[in-house]
Length: 422
Image (tube, rainbow, N blue to C red; front, side, top):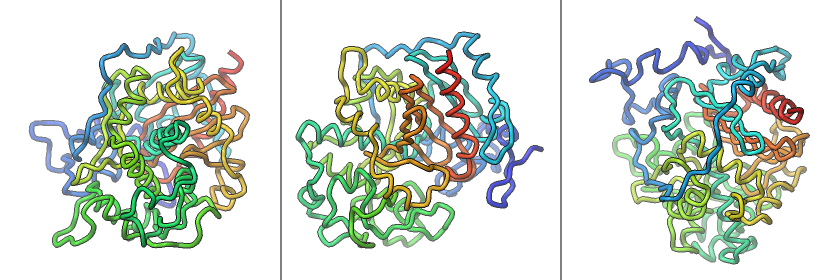
């Protein structure tokens, strides 16, 4: 049985851990040792996550993000020559190991990958439990959708970048967010005491998950009942605006501000402003807490092709043909990036030269790429200089991107070089 080692722990590789071959949730009923239930609190852990991330709606309460009735945005189908060209790539990982393209996919536990070049699909492949019609949980890719909407509202004048959080949310007076601005939220520069170490079972991120209802609450639970109640408990960790400090709770405050300013819930904003206008093929959905508030930091699920459509929109400066869906000025500001010095101090050693703007990771690399990222391997890589978009959904055993970036980053850059020469 093939295994991979991350941080001293051995895991079955992407082939051996295939959830279909291993019988997860198959049968009527499934075998007891192949049943995945929310109450067991194992669905986010490997190997159960290899099935669960493609079926999260069967485990958690959700709200629909409807596609509407318009025609879908056609991406075409990959030509055999394009597929052969992509699969012929050899990838040299940051550790010096050489892998074939297919090995790079299985070694990073990819569930689905799609590559667009000049708006045309040149590669598409699915693994394990994922299918073209199934939405897959995107985790923090949700943040890039949310912040792009918020930046659009700023551009339109419904919000202001320097607007104080508490001007719209007086409920957060006395919390860490009292003196924070919308810009601090968008660029993850809020001084908030919040531990988001997914490897630490006692980290506050799990208290946040219990409040949101995305993890079971223990018997006798007396903590916050919902995301908004949880946000009000968070305290200051220092001044705002000094450093890049990635915290998912910032996105929840951002989404609350958008809903308060517009009177429209996040799911409806997504449907009206992105899902319908870009011609998504399928409905998406968002996880919601017990009060119906959407999990804006990590709760969005979509099909692989619909994720690719959002990436192509951003590559095309916010336009789908003649329809300007997102203001071009918003996309241009994202592409310029943020403060590189503040990012450099945050310790992301595998991302040298990066910055962060409007909840996008900006590479400043040879492809002028900017990325949406999510734990367990979710990625939307928009590379204007290569005229390329890569969407990837995955179920890696380890939450942090540092576990797969040594393979993922060379793969993405190699794809861009290949297509530039096409």
